[in-house]
Length: 141
Image (cartoon, rainbow, N blue to C red; front, side):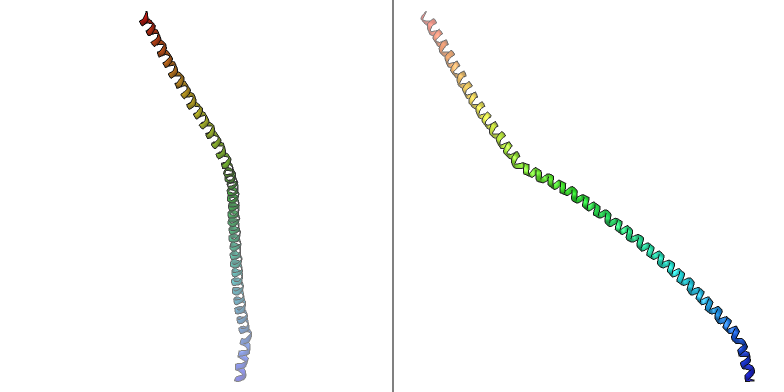
């Protein structure tokens, strides 16, 4: 009896082996598909990370270019302001000299006005004296 049971089991071994082989093949296929999917997902993730890294680098490059441009503009403006500041003492000197010239002209005008007024006063006195003299002569005649 035992021998018959062993023979039945031996006959079932190839079927079981085939079943196990099919199961192993199925598991291997599922694992292969999962590995492929994981690989594709990993590649997609890496590609997205690379894309983000490129975009980030482009943003950094743009910011650095803007900073450099702003720095150049500020440097040129600083040079301009420094040049203007250096010219201030010279401008002040020019204005000071112009003020002195205008003060001298004003003084000359005042003096000329005083002379003119004195001459006019002298003429008035002379005219008055001439008039008085004429009146005195008329009175004598």
